[in-house]
Length: 247
Image (tube, rainbow, N blue to C red):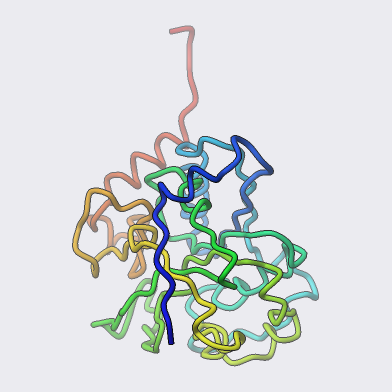
């Protein structure tokens, strides 16, 4: 297996038009952590230097497109619906998916500029082996190859046509999250790891662009003091701001 050279954000930026259509972003939504979606969306918009179109993946809005029964190992509502992103994008152009338990710390356009037509999907290729067996709200922690690769995905939608609603509704969890729907792993491109920094696992870094509270976000009491918790609360407060008076 040959590995194509990883393109830097600076390399891709030079070829990007000054302004094109909005960047399509899909975010997983779970009612048990609804505040996470709102804060993440606010952080994306606040840092962005071009238009962004954000769609929450809410099961209540997917109707008969998503009919899959909830699995006992499924820790969030969007564990599998995330793979409908290419379908919801009309299998056209590129789209970004990300979990809701994240915080954007940089311009998402820099992530968008990394898309590469040689690949069907692009991810941060973590070597993540969880140490714990339980995570937020008592959910079971699962361990499998390519763990957390699917928590941030840049989809080259036309090359992901295998992800039909029928396939997403019936494929096994491992088939989906281990990208068995692709012909081979050569179609999975590599993103810089700053675009999916795993809080509590990865060593702290000042240049983390997208931090992932994979064990549980600061909106849960038991994780209120985790890494980047203060930044998350500051973002929440900025989202809730409303000017009062004439000052």
